[in-house]
Amino acid sequence: MEQKAKTARQRAREEITEEILAAARARLTSHGPGELSLRAVARDVGMVSSAVYRYFSSRDDLLTALLIEGYDALGEAVELADRSVEDRTDIHQRWLAACRAIRTWSIEHPGDYALLYGSPVPGYAAPQDTVGPATRVVIVLISIAGDAHRAGAASPLPPSAAPAEAGSTVAAAMEFVEAHDDLKGPLDPEIAVRTLMAWTTIFGTVSFELFGHLVGSVSDYDAYFDQVATRLGSDLGII
Amino acid sequence: MEQKAKTARQRAREEITEEILAAARARLTSHGPGELSLRAVARDVGMVSSAVYRYFSSRDDLLTALLIEGYDALGEAVELADRSVEDRTDIHQRWLAACRAIRTWSIEHPGDYALLYGSPVPGYAAPQDTVGPATRVVIVLISIAGDAHRAGAASPLPPSAAPAEAGSTVAAAMEFVEAHDDLKGPLDPEIAVRTLMAWTTIFGTVSFELFGHLVGSVSDYDAYFDQVATRLGSDLGII
DNA sequence: GACATTTCAAGAGCAGTGCTCTTGTTTGTT
DNA sequence: AACAAACAAGAGCACTGCTCTTGAAATGTC
Image (cartoon, rainbow over all chains, first blue to last red; front, top):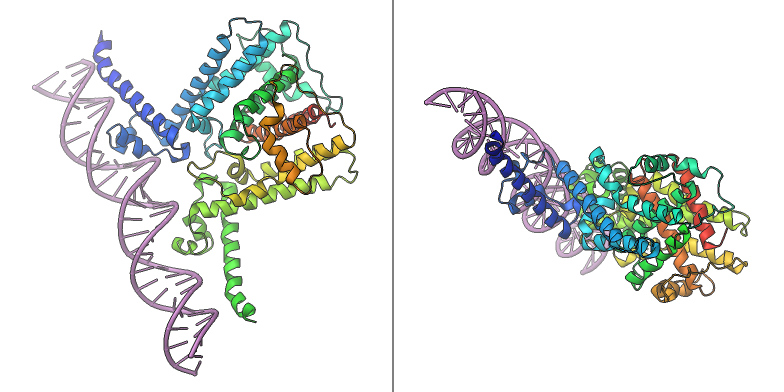
C-alpha cells in the first residue's frame, strides 16, 4: 500500500531521470558525445548541474545510460526491419532490410552512432550492462544467415590460401551463438567468420560514410551501400 | 645571405613546433584525441599555454597537424610493408603484408588511430591538406589489386542479385585512380567496389578490435585478422 | 652603432567544464 | 509531531580553450 505513496517520489524521480536522458539525447544528436556537457543538459531541464548528480553519479554514468538506450534503439530498429519481411524465406529481402536498417538508423542518429561505434572515451570501459543490447544487431544478422543455411543455402568455402584454424579464432562467437536461445542449432565456423566479417563491413561502411572517409570515392551513398550489402550476402552464400 | 640569420629564428621556430607536435603525439598515445589538452602539452614543453598559440592558431589546428602526420606515418608504414616483399608477383604476400601493416601500426598507435579513423570532432571538417596523405593507404591496396589483375587474375563477378549500376556509384573513385600517376591503367568497376569494400572491412576490423566490439567473439585477434585479410583477397580475386 | 619593427613568452582574465561539499528545504515514515 | 531520507541550490576547486596586454628579446633598417 505504500507503493503509491512511495511512487509519488519515485515517479518524480523516474520522470526527471527520463527528462535528463531526453535532454542529453537531444544534445547528442546535434553535438557529439565528447561535447556532451552535463551542465548544459542540466540547464535544458531547468536544474542546476549539481542536482543532476542525484540521478547520474557521473558524466560517464549518463553516457552509459545513453549507450544502452542507443544499442537498444538500433537493435530494435534492425529487428523490426527483419520482422517486417513477411515472407520469412525471402532471405535476400530480409538481409537487405536488416542492413539498410542499420544504415538508416545510424544516419538519423549520428550522435548516438558516434557514441556507440566511434572511438570510445579513453579509460572508459563499457560496463557489462551494455553487452546484451549491443549484441542485438549481430544476432539478427546471424539468425538470417542461419535460416538461409538451414533452408539449404550452401556454405561458403574458405579460400584455399586461408590459414588452417578458422574455427578456433571465432570459437567464442560460436559458443555465444549456441548458448543463445533464439538461435537454434550449431554454427558452421566459416559462416561464423563470414558473418562477423559482414557485420564489420556494414559498420565500417556506415562509419566511413558518416566520418567522411568516402568523400571523393563514392557519389551515391544509398546505391553504394546496397552494392556492398548485396556482395556481403553473396559472399555469405545466402543470396 | 640572410637565410642563415633568418634561419636562426626560423630554425628555433621549427624546432619548437616539432617539440610541440612530439609532446602532443606523446599525449595522444596515452589519452585520446578528445582529451588532448593544449595546456598540458604546453606544460610538457615548458611553455605557458598562450605561447603555443604562436605556433598553432587553435587546438583544431594542432589536431590537423597531427592528423596529417598520422596519415603520413600510417601510409608510409603500409607502403614500406608492400615494398618489402621482394617478389613483386607474389600478390598474396604483398596483400597480407599491407593488411597486416595497417593493423600493426594502428595497434601501436591507438591514439593516432582514434584521431584518424574514430569519430571526428563535431563541427570539425578535415581541411583539404589531409586528403593527400589520407589516400596513401588505399592507393597501396588498389595498386596491389591492379597488379594482380594486370598479371592475369580474374575479376570477381558481381553477384547476380546486385543492383544494376555498380560502376556509377564509385565513379569518383575510378576517376581518382585514373588521374593518379602511380596507378597505371583504368579500373574495372567491380574491382573498384571490391577494393573499397576490402579497405572498409580492414579498417572496420581494426576499429572493432581497438574499440572493443569483438570482445567475446574473437579469441585470437592476430589469427582472426589473417583470416579476414585472406578472405578479402580471395573475394577480390587476387589470391 | 642606434633606432624601429617584428617575434616571442608570459601573465591575467573570461567563460566554460566535471565534480564535491555544504546549506536549506521538501517529502515520506514512524 | 518528530525524525530521517531525498532533494535542489549554491559556492567553490581545478581544469579547459582562448584572448588581450605587457615586457623582453631577436631581427631589419637607417
